Image (cartoon, rainbow, N blue to C red; front, side, top):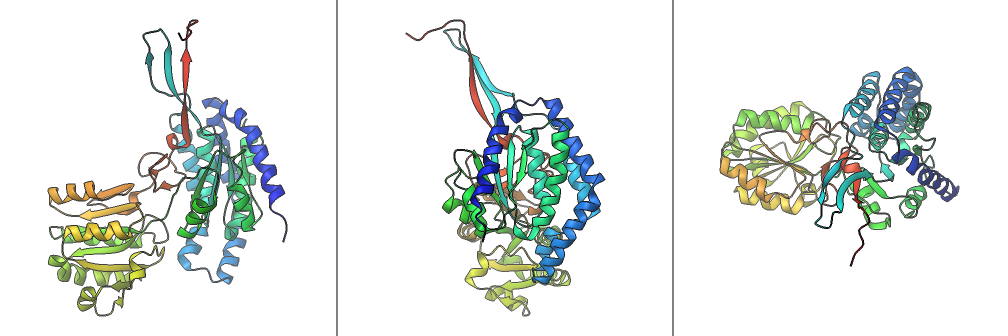
Length: 419
Protein backbone atom coordinates (compact mmCIF):
# COMPACT_ATOMS: atom_id res chain seq x y z
CA UNK A 1 0.00 0.00 0.00
CA UNK A 2 1.40 3.37 -0.97
CA UNK A 3 1.76 6.15 1.57
CA UNK A 4 -1.05 8.66 0.98
CA UNK A 5 0.50 11.36 3.13
CA UNK A 6 2.95 12.96 0.61
CA UNK A 7 0.31 13.52 -2.10
CA UNK A 8 -2.21 14.98 0.33
CA UNK A 9 0.27 17.29 2.03
CA UNK A 10 1.72 18.46 -1.28
CA UNK A 11 -1.70 19.34 -2.67
CA UNK A 12 -2.80 20.99 0.57
CA UNK A 13 0.32 23.15 0.57
CA UNK A 14 -0.31 24.14 -3.03
CA UNK A 15 -3.91 24.99 -2.19
CA UNK A 16 -2.87 27.19 0.71
CA UNK A 17 -0.37 28.99 -1.54
CA UNK A 18 -3.11 29.60 -4.14
CA UNK A 19 -5.76 30.79 -1.67
CA UNK A 20 -4.68 34.44 -1.47
CA UNK A 21 -4.52 34.76 -5.27
CA UNK A 22 -7.94 33.13 -5.64
CA UNK A 23 -9.47 35.41 -3.00
CA UNK A 24 -8.18 38.46 -4.89
CA UNK A 25 -9.73 37.45 -8.23
CA UNK A 26 -12.30 39.95 -9.49
CA UNK A 27 -15.88 39.01 -10.27
CA UNK A 28 -15.12 39.35 -13.99
CA UNK A 29 -12.24 36.88 -13.77
CA UNK A 30 -14.25 34.38 -11.73
CA UNK A 31 -17.17 34.53 -14.14
CA UNK A 32 -14.82 34.09 -17.11
CA UNK A 33 -13.33 31.05 -15.37
CA UNK A 34 -16.77 29.52 -14.79
CA UNK A 35 -17.80 29.97 -18.44
CA UNK A 36 -14.51 28.46 -19.57
CA UNK A 37 -15.13 25.45 -17.31
CA UNK A 38 -18.63 25.04 -18.75
CA UNK A 39 -17.35 25.24 -22.33
CA UNK A 40 -14.67 22.66 -21.59
CA UNK A 41 -17.20 20.18 -20.19
CA UNK A 42 -19.18 20.30 -23.43
CA UNK A 43 -16.15 20.25 -25.71
CA UNK A 44 -14.52 17.30 -23.93
CA UNK A 45 -17.65 15.39 -22.99
CA UNK A 46 -16.63 12.22 -24.80
CA UNK A 47 -13.37 12.06 -22.84
CA UNK A 48 -15.42 12.41 -19.63
CA UNK A 49 -18.01 9.83 -20.71
CA UNK A 50 -15.30 7.30 -21.55
CA UNK A 51 -13.80 7.66 -18.07
CA UNK A 52 -17.24 7.41 -16.49
CA UNK A 53 -18.06 4.27 -18.49
CA UNK A 54 -15.06 2.55 -16.94
CA UNK A 55 -16.25 3.49 -13.44
CA UNK A 56 -19.83 2.36 -14.13
CA UNK A 57 -18.66 -0.95 -15.58
CA UNK A 58 -16.50 -1.62 -12.52
CA UNK A 59 -19.35 -0.65 -10.19
CA UNK A 60 -21.75 -3.07 -11.84
CA UNK A 61 -19.18 -5.86 -11.79
CA UNK A 62 -18.70 -5.20 -8.08
CA UNK A 63 -22.46 -5.53 -7.49
CA UNK A 64 -23.18 -1.91 -6.55
CA UNK A 65 -26.94 -1.36 -6.04
CA UNK A 66 -28.73 0.18 -9.02
CA UNK A 67 -29.66 3.47 -7.26
CA UNK A 68 -25.98 3.94 -6.41
CA UNK A 69 -25.00 3.17 -10.01
CA UNK A 70 -27.52 5.84 -11.04
CA UNK A 71 -25.76 8.36 -8.78
CA UNK A 72 -22.47 7.47 -10.47
CA UNK A 73 -23.69 7.47 -14.08
CA UNK A 74 -22.97 10.42 -16.38
CA UNK A 75 -24.66 11.11 -19.71
CA UNK A 76 -24.54 13.89 -22.27
CA UNK A 77 -27.65 15.30 -20.61
CA UNK A 78 -26.05 15.27 -17.16
CA UNK A 79 -22.85 16.83 -18.44
CA UNK A 80 -24.89 19.54 -20.14
CA UNK A 81 -26.71 20.10 -16.84
CA UNK A 82 -23.38 20.46 -15.02
CA UNK A 83 -22.21 23.00 -17.59
CA UNK A 84 -25.48 24.92 -17.30
CA UNK A 85 -25.08 24.87 -13.52
CA UNK A 86 -21.69 26.58 -13.85
CA UNK A 87 -23.20 29.27 -16.09
CA UNK A 88 -25.99 29.79 -13.56
CA UNK A 89 -23.41 30.25 -10.79
CA UNK A 90 -21.59 32.78 -12.98
CA UNK A 91 -24.83 34.74 -13.30
CA UNK A 92 -25.35 34.92 -9.53
CA UNK A 93 -24.25 37.98 -7.55
CA UNK A 94 -20.72 37.72 -6.20
CA UNK A 95 -20.92 37.48 -2.39
CA UNK A 96 -17.28 38.44 -1.84
CA UNK A 97 -16.91 42.04 -0.73
CA UNK A 98 -20.56 42.42 0.22
CA UNK A 99 -20.99 44.72 3.22
CA UNK A 100 -23.23 42.73 5.56
CA UNK A 101 -23.57 45.47 8.15
CA UNK A 102 -21.75 48.53 9.35
CA UNK A 103 -21.85 52.05 10.59
CA UNK A 104 -19.89 54.92 12.08
CA UNK A 105 -19.11 54.95 15.79
CA UNK A 106 -19.28 58.09 17.95
CA UNK A 107 -15.48 58.29 17.82
CA UNK A 108 -15.59 58.54 14.02
CA UNK A 109 -14.50 54.96 13.23
CA UNK A 110 -16.33 53.42 10.28
CA UNK A 111 -16.78 49.72 11.08
CA UNK A 112 -17.87 47.42 8.23
CA UNK A 113 -18.68 43.71 8.35
CA UNK A 114 -17.52 42.41 4.97
CA UNK A 115 -18.05 39.01 3.35
CA UNK A 116 -14.81 37.17 2.44
CA UNK A 117 -13.88 33.67 1.17
CA UNK A 118 -13.44 30.77 3.58
CA UNK A 119 -10.04 30.04 2.00
CA UNK A 120 -9.17 26.36 1.46
CA UNK A 121 -12.21 24.06 1.36
CA UNK A 122 -11.74 20.29 1.61
CA UNK A 123 -14.55 18.20 0.07
CA UNK A 124 -14.84 14.51 0.97
CA UNK A 125 -17.72 12.87 -0.89
CA UNK A 126 -19.08 9.69 -2.44
CA UNK A 127 -20.37 8.43 -5.79
CA UNK A 128 -21.83 11.43 -7.61
CA UNK A 129 -19.34 12.96 -10.09
CA UNK A 130 -21.52 16.06 -10.51
CA UNK A 131 -20.48 17.02 -6.96
CA UNK A 132 -16.96 17.50 -8.33
CA UNK A 133 -18.12 20.19 -10.73
CA UNK A 134 -20.66 21.77 -8.39
CA UNK A 135 -18.08 22.09 -5.61
CA UNK A 136 -15.40 23.49 -7.89
CA UNK A 137 -17.76 26.02 -9.49
CA UNK A 138 -19.20 27.30 -6.23
CA UNK A 139 -15.76 27.56 -4.66
CA UNK A 140 -14.49 29.57 -7.64
CA UNK A 141 -17.35 32.09 -7.42
CA UNK A 142 -16.94 32.39 -3.65
CA UNK A 143 -13.18 32.98 -4.05
CA UNK A 144 -12.09 29.70 -2.46
CA UNK A 145 -9.70 26.99 -3.57
CA UNK A 146 -10.91 23.42 -3.18
CA UNK A 147 -9.30 20.06 -2.49
CA UNK A 148 -11.56 17.25 -3.71
CA UNK A 149 -11.52 13.69 -2.41
CA UNK A 150 -14.25 11.66 -4.10
CA UNK A 151 -15.16 8.02 -3.66
CA UNK A 152 -13.01 5.30 -5.18
CA UNK A 153 -15.96 4.13 -7.31
CA UNK A 154 -15.85 7.44 -9.24
CA UNK A 155 -12.09 7.88 -9.37
CA UNK A 156 -11.67 7.86 -13.16
CA UNK A 157 -14.71 10.12 -13.69
CA UNK A 158 -13.50 12.63 -11.11
CA UNK A 159 -9.96 12.61 -12.46
CA UNK A 160 -11.23 13.37 -15.96
CA UNK A 161 -13.55 16.11 -14.72
CA UNK A 162 -10.88 17.85 -12.63
CA UNK A 163 -8.40 17.65 -15.48
CA UNK A 164 -10.89 19.22 -17.89
CA UNK A 165 -12.23 21.99 -15.67
CA UNK A 166 -8.88 22.61 -13.96
CA UNK A 167 -7.06 23.24 -17.23
CA UNK A 168 -9.89 25.48 -18.43
CA UNK A 169 -9.95 27.43 -15.17
CA UNK A 170 -6.22 28.07 -15.20
CA UNK A 171 -6.35 29.13 -18.84
CA UNK A 172 -9.05 31.65 -17.99
CA UNK A 173 -7.15 33.24 -15.10
CA UNK A 174 -7.57 31.10 -11.98
CA UNK A 175 -4.51 30.02 -9.98
CA UNK A 176 -2.95 26.77 -11.14
CA UNK A 177 -3.94 24.93 -7.98
CA UNK A 178 -7.41 26.40 -7.45
CA UNK A 179 -8.97 22.92 -7.70
CA UNK A 180 -7.20 19.66 -7.00
CA UNK A 181 -8.22 16.04 -6.67
CA UNK A 182 -6.74 13.57 -4.19
CA UNK A 183 -6.38 10.56 -6.46
CA UNK A 184 -5.19 8.07 -3.86
CA UNK A 185 -8.18 5.77 -3.15
CA UNK A 186 -6.72 4.75 0.21
CA UNK A 187 -8.82 5.87 3.20
CA UNK A 188 -5.62 7.15 4.75
CA UNK A 189 -5.74 10.00 2.23
CA UNK A 190 -9.07 11.22 3.58
CA UNK A 191 -7.87 10.79 7.15
CA UNK A 192 -4.77 12.85 6.41
CA UNK A 193 -6.86 15.62 4.85
CA UNK A 194 -9.03 15.71 7.98
CA UNK A 195 -6.04 16.69 10.13
CA UNK A 196 -4.33 19.35 8.03
CA UNK A 197 -5.43 22.36 10.07
CA UNK A 198 -2.43 24.40 8.98
CA UNK A 199 -3.55 24.24 5.34
CA UNK A 200 -7.32 23.54 5.25
CA UNK A 201 -9.89 25.96 6.65
CA UNK A 202 -13.03 23.80 6.54
CA UNK A 203 -14.10 20.27 5.59
CA UNK A 204 -17.43 19.51 3.94
CA UNK A 205 -18.27 15.79 3.88
CA UNK A 206 -21.07 14.74 1.51
CA UNK A 207 -22.27 11.17 1.47
CA UNK A 208 -23.76 8.46 3.64
CA UNK A 209 -24.00 8.26 7.41
CA UNK A 210 -20.72 6.32 7.70
CA UNK A 211 -18.72 8.98 5.87
CA UNK A 212 -20.29 11.84 7.82
CA UNK A 213 -19.69 10.09 11.15
CA UNK A 214 -16.06 9.31 10.24
CA UNK A 215 -15.38 12.97 9.49
CA UNK A 216 -17.17 14.27 12.58
CA UNK A 217 -15.39 11.76 14.82
CA UNK A 218 -11.86 12.05 13.42
CA UNK A 219 -11.40 15.48 11.83
CA UNK A 220 -9.45 18.20 13.59
CA UNK A 221 -10.21 20.60 10.73
CA UNK A 222 -13.60 22.29 11.36
CA UNK A 223 -16.30 20.28 9.54
CA UNK A 224 -19.86 20.97 8.38
CA UNK A 225 -22.18 17.96 8.60
CA UNK A 226 -24.16 17.42 5.41
CA UNK A 227 -26.27 15.00 3.53
CA UNK A 228 -27.73 12.21 5.69
CA UNK A 229 -31.44 12.34 4.95
CA UNK A 230 -33.83 10.09 6.84
CA UNK A 231 -36.73 12.20 5.57
CA UNK A 232 -40.38 11.74 6.57
CA UNK A 233 -43.72 12.56 4.98
CA UNK A 234 -46.60 12.74 7.47
CA UNK A 235 -50.14 12.47 6.09
CA UNK A 236 -52.44 14.19 8.55
CA UNK A 237 -56.08 13.29 9.18
CA UNK A 238 -57.17 16.46 7.32
CA UNK A 239 -54.96 15.83 4.27
CA UNK A 240 -56.17 16.02 0.68
CA UNK A 241 -55.51 12.35 -0.06
CA UNK A 242 -55.11 12.81 -3.82
CA UNK A 243 -52.46 15.47 -3.17
CA UNK A 244 -50.85 13.25 -0.55
CA UNK A 245 -50.57 10.34 -3.00
CA UNK A 246 -48.80 12.47 -5.59
CA UNK A 247 -46.40 13.92 -3.01
CA UNK A 248 -45.53 10.56 -1.42
CA UNK A 249 -44.89 8.88 -4.77
CA UNK A 250 -42.73 11.79 -5.91
CA UNK A 251 -40.81 12.04 -2.64
CA UNK A 252 -39.98 8.32 -2.69
CA UNK A 253 -39.74 7.41 -6.36
CA UNK A 254 -38.67 10.41 -8.44
CA UNK A 255 -35.03 9.76 -7.51
CA UNK A 256 -34.68 7.39 -4.56
CA UNK A 257 -30.89 7.43 -4.32
CA UNK A 258 -30.57 11.03 -3.06
CA UNK A 259 -30.60 12.54 0.40
CA UNK A 260 -33.89 14.45 0.04
CA UNK A 261 -35.92 11.38 -0.94
CA UNK A 262 -38.51 10.24 1.60
CA UNK A 263 -37.55 7.15 3.63
CA UNK A 264 -40.51 6.93 6.05
CA UNK A 265 -44.23 7.53 5.56
CA UNK A 266 -46.28 8.38 8.64
CA UNK A 267 -50.08 8.25 8.32
CA UNK A 268 -52.74 9.34 10.82
CA UNK A 269 -54.93 6.40 11.87
CA UNK A 270 -58.11 8.27 10.90
CA UNK A 271 -57.18 8.14 7.20
CA UNK A 272 -54.78 5.20 7.21
CA UNK A 273 -57.02 2.55 5.68
CA UNK A 274 -58.32 4.79 2.91
CA UNK A 275 -54.96 6.35 2.12
CA UNK A 276 -52.77 3.25 2.33
CA UNK A 277 -55.14 1.26 0.11
CA UNK A 278 -54.77 4.06 -2.46
CA UNK A 279 -51.04 4.77 -2.27
CA UNK A 280 -49.74 1.25 -1.55
CA UNK A 281 -50.42 -0.17 -5.03
CA UNK A 282 -49.04 2.97 -6.70
CA UNK A 283 -45.78 2.66 -4.77
CA UNK A 284 -45.53 -1.05 -5.57
CA UNK A 285 -46.07 -0.26 -9.26
CA UNK A 286 -42.95 1.91 -9.03
CA UNK A 287 -40.99 -1.01 -7.57
CA UNK A 288 -41.09 0.15 -3.96
CA UNK A 289 -40.68 -2.43 -1.20
CA UNK A 290 -42.92 -1.50 1.74
CA UNK A 291 -41.93 -2.25 5.34
CA UNK A 292 -44.77 -1.54 7.71
CA UNK A 293 -45.86 -1.47 11.33
CA UNK A 294 -48.50 -4.03 12.42
CA UNK A 295 -51.40 -1.67 11.60
CA UNK A 296 -49.93 -0.99 8.14
CA UNK A 297 -49.58 -4.73 7.49
CA UNK A 298 -53.18 -5.25 8.48
CA UNK A 299 -54.15 -2.88 5.65
CA UNK A 300 -51.38 -3.89 3.21
CA UNK A 301 -50.71 -7.58 3.98
CA UNK A 302 -47.96 -7.86 1.34
CA UNK A 303 -45.80 -5.31 3.18
CA UNK A 304 -42.84 -6.72 5.08
CA UNK A 305 -42.61 -6.24 8.83
CA UNK A 306 -40.70 -3.10 9.76
CA UNK A 307 -38.05 -3.43 12.46
CA UNK A 308 -36.77 -0.73 14.79
CA UNK A 309 -33.77 -0.39 12.49
CA UNK A 310 -36.01 0.51 9.55
CA UNK A 311 -37.23 3.69 11.26
CA UNK A 312 -33.66 4.99 11.43
CA UNK A 313 -32.43 3.88 7.99
CA UNK A 314 -31.59 6.11 5.04
CA UNK A 315 -32.25 3.51 2.34
CA UNK A 316 -31.26 5.49 -0.76
CA UNK A 317 -33.27 2.83 -2.55
CA UNK A 318 -36.84 1.91 -3.50
CA UNK A 319 -37.71 0.93 0.06
CA UNK A 320 -40.19 2.80 2.27
CA UNK A 321 -40.93 2.33 5.95
CA UNK A 322 -44.59 2.97 6.81
CA UNK A 323 -46.08 3.63 10.25
CA UNK A 324 -49.63 4.47 11.28
CA UNK A 325 -49.70 7.02 14.12
CA UNK A 326 -52.48 8.03 16.50
CA UNK A 327 -51.89 11.77 16.36
CA UNK A 328 -49.81 14.65 15.07
CA UNK A 329 -47.91 14.58 18.37
CA UNK A 330 -46.97 10.94 17.86
CA UNK A 331 -45.73 11.78 14.37
CA UNK A 332 -43.62 14.60 15.80
CA UNK A 333 -42.21 12.26 18.45
CA UNK A 334 -41.30 9.71 15.77
CA UNK A 335 -39.51 12.34 13.66
CA UNK A 336 -37.66 13.67 16.71
CA UNK A 337 -36.48 10.17 17.59
CA UNK A 338 -35.44 9.04 14.11
CA UNK A 339 -34.98 12.08 11.85
CA UNK A 340 -31.62 13.43 10.75
CA UNK A 341 -32.59 17.13 10.69
CA UNK A 342 -32.66 17.21 6.88
CA UNK A 343 -36.15 17.55 5.34
CA UNK A 344 -39.59 16.74 6.78
CA UNK A 345 -43.08 17.21 5.29
CA UNK A 346 -46.67 17.39 6.48
CA UNK A 347 -49.68 16.99 4.20
CA UNK A 348 -52.66 18.74 5.76
CA UNK A 349 -55.52 21.17 5.15
CA UNK A 350 -55.44 22.33 8.77
CA UNK A 351 -53.49 25.59 9.15
CA UNK A 352 -52.99 25.17 12.90
CA UNK A 353 -51.55 21.67 12.44
CA UNK A 354 -49.24 22.91 9.71
CA UNK A 355 -48.01 25.68 12.01
CA UNK A 356 -47.53 23.22 14.88
CA UNK A 357 -45.51 20.91 12.62
CA UNK A 358 -43.29 23.72 11.32
CA UNK A 359 -42.64 25.03 14.82
CA UNK A 360 -41.91 21.63 16.39
CA UNK A 361 -39.82 19.87 13.74
CA UNK A 362 -36.06 20.44 14.08
CA UNK A 363 -34.84 20.19 10.48
CA UNK A 364 -33.07 22.29 7.88
CA UNK A 365 -36.16 22.23 5.62
CA UNK A 366 -39.78 21.78 6.71
CA UNK A 367 -42.51 21.40 4.07
CA UNK A 368 -46.25 21.92 4.10
CA UNK A 369 -48.04 20.17 1.22
CA UNK A 370 -44.95 19.68 -0.94
CA UNK A 371 -42.39 16.98 -1.70
CA UNK A 372 -39.11 16.79 0.23
CA UNK A 373 -37.36 16.48 -3.14
CA UNK A 374 -37.19 20.28 -3.39
CA UNK A 375 -34.40 20.58 -0.82
CA UNK A 376 -31.78 21.56 -3.35
CA UNK A 377 -29.74 24.66 -4.08
CA UNK A 378 -31.08 25.01 -7.60
CA UNK A 379 -34.70 24.61 -6.51
CA UNK A 380 -34.17 27.19 -3.76
CA UNK A 381 -32.74 29.69 -6.25
CA UNK A 382 -29.21 29.46 -4.89
CA UNK A 383 -27.66 27.98 -8.03
CA UNK A 384 -25.79 24.72 -7.57
CA UNK A 385 -25.18 23.74 -3.98
CA UNK A 386 -22.17 22.13 -2.32
CA UNK A 387 -24.28 20.08 0.08
CA UNK A 388 -27.23 20.16 2.48
CA UNK A 389 -26.07 21.12 5.95
CA UNK A 390 -27.97 19.31 8.70
CA UNK A 391 -26.25 21.18 11.53
CA UNK A 392 -26.80 24.70 12.86
CA UNK A 393 -23.29 26.22 12.64
CA UNK A 394 -22.00 27.71 10.36
CA UNK A 395 -24.64 26.97 7.74
CA UNK A 396 -27.97 25.12 7.53
CA UNK A 397 -29.83 23.66 4.56
CA UNK A 398 -28.62 23.99 0.95
CA UNK A 399 -25.15 25.52 0.98
CA UNK A 400 -24.82 28.02 -1.84
CA UNK A 401 -22.39 30.86 -2.38
CA UNK A 402 -22.98 32.82 0.81
CA UNK A 403 -22.53 29.67 2.89
CA UNK A 404 -19.07 29.30 1.33
CA UNK A 405 -17.95 32.62 2.76
CA UNK A 406 -17.23 34.04 6.18
CA UNK A 407 -16.71 37.66 7.16
CA UNK A 408 -14.20 40.02 8.63
CA UNK A 409 -14.47 43.50 10.11
CA UNK A 410 -12.85 46.32 8.17
CA UNK A 411 -12.35 49.51 10.19
CA UNK A 412 -11.63 52.91 8.67
CA UNK A 413 -10.25 55.65 10.86
CA UNK A 414 -8.62 59.06 10.78
CA UNK A 415 -5.93 58.65 13.38
CA UNK A 416 -8.11 57.51 16.29
CA UNK A 417 -6.37 56.00 19.32
CA UNK A 418 -8.01 54.31 22.27
CA UNK A 419 -7.82 56.14 25.61
